[in-house]
Image (cartoon, rainbow over all chains, first blue to last red; front, side, top):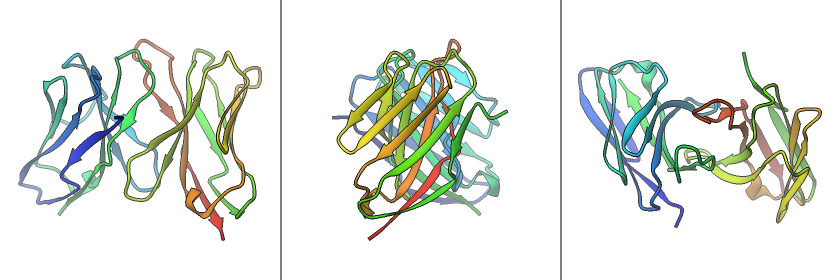
Length: 113
Length: 113
């Protein structure tokens, strides 16, 4: 089973709201990733967790706050977002931090009003 | 500076034809070259990947050709079908300690019935 699940599928939020995106995998993968994808662009790496510890933060604004409660779960907490943050947010996982093959979830379509 | 250059930006092919998408990279430290397929509103799905120790890899109708000296690799889709209509991204990985993927800008493929 190479499935990464993400909830919710769609999210609309105002600039003052606080919301969270959730990602889950049960493949025993120990590296998990958050990407942001704008229309007609490639995915843009935001964060990497390796063995439940944050290993890469690609200079993402603090209004995005990642969390890895356990090896199967990855959250992205959102607060005070801007309309330009509207995008498809993708979660991915790989066997380990030095394993290249990344499996992507279906994404959460986020709209910030 | 874009490290992985992908062409063409868009491609129209007749059903049954061959679709060819090309990528070129600059960093000789890359050692992993995947192709991802993405349908609208979905996450990227790994299609096929190659490492520099082989010049070609085939999986069904999909073939990667790799030219290490030219620092180029390409995706060939044989007997293209309307269901292949999607955006295709090449990527390169393995350079640096974090082995993150560097993505091409994508090719929008349309296969006419």
